[in-house]
Amino acid sequence: MLHESSERTPRARDGVPRGVGPLERTSAVTAIVRGREVLWFAGCDYLGLAHHPDVVAALVAEARVHGVSASASPTTTGTSPAHVELETRLARFLGVESALLVADGYLSNLVALQALAPELDELLVASGSHVSVQDAARATGLDVREWSGGPPSFEGRSAIATDGLFPSAGRVAPLDELVPLLDRGLAALVVDDCHGLGVLGARGRGTCEHFGARHARLVITGTLSKALGAFGGFVAGRRAFVAAAREHAHAFAGATPIPPALARAAIAAVDVVEREPARLARLRANIARLRGALARHGRVMSEFDNPVATIALKDAAAMEHAHELLLDLGLLVPFVQYPDGLGGYLRIALSAEHAPEHLDRLEAGLARVLVGA
Image 1 (cartoon, rainbow, N blue to C red):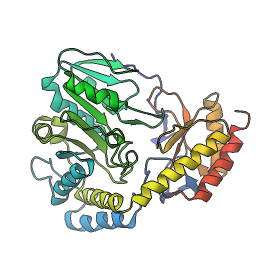
Image 2: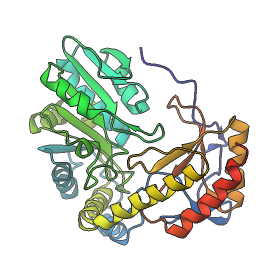
Image 3: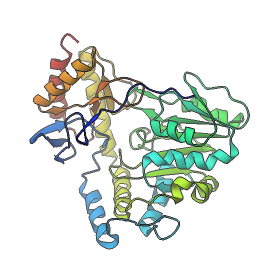
């Protein structure tokens, strides 16, 4: 059985999660919180594309053509030219044969594992993987085992499911050790690359590019709502597998696809990533700058290009206090209590749009928080 984390997301008050409350307005690097503009180091818009003018313009133009909703299953009348084009673009971007667009990133793992399940007896899930991986594994009805450390042992018809980048834990899946198992009898390797896409690899193609990992039985799942700044999920891999997912996965056929306007926005986002490699370079410069700042205050950040850093203090009360102190200083660094088994922590997320002076302000604020911590 998979480990059940004792951590849960913050309780809601009147339908609003505990914390800063709704963000009244955002840009790539600022937010209006409690009526005041602050710098924000939160969320997952790592490349700053959610507010890119080309991405926003593509969304608005397509909404005028197709309206707000796709309004039907993708197997009936819910598919638009933008959906088809986005699938082609994602496959090319990832360097695989085919891709399938699904309703959101959470469902991408369920679609992938539903397609694989008829050929399997067992699923091995990496410890600390996203709850969508864990939930999807349980939903298949297969035997599920959690593993950690080196490559797992297996026998019979088995597949492995794992996150690619574990941003809050500061680690990556050892694909250099896992992919060779596909030539030793492993039926499939599913890599949830929600946080690696757009961030890792020489061109930002993700964890598989980071390791140079390619294989016919390698399946990539992910979301468009993080580094690409849009919304939706995808399953990608060899053409025959994607066709099977399209035909047999109920989580695909039974869900309304993303609005065509969001599909067009995601296409524009891929365009920006491909033509503006300097955007990824800026993100990595910011990561290096934050790594140095944390080191000056006795904190260690992962040595690879991870846009997320976490800071744990002595207890929840101390982290709530630190969060509020930073907010008073005009810095939104959320106190996160997420079902990832790590406990609570302050979560710092960087964007390519953060300027050096923004990082300087962040370091000054962290210096206040970390005194005596």
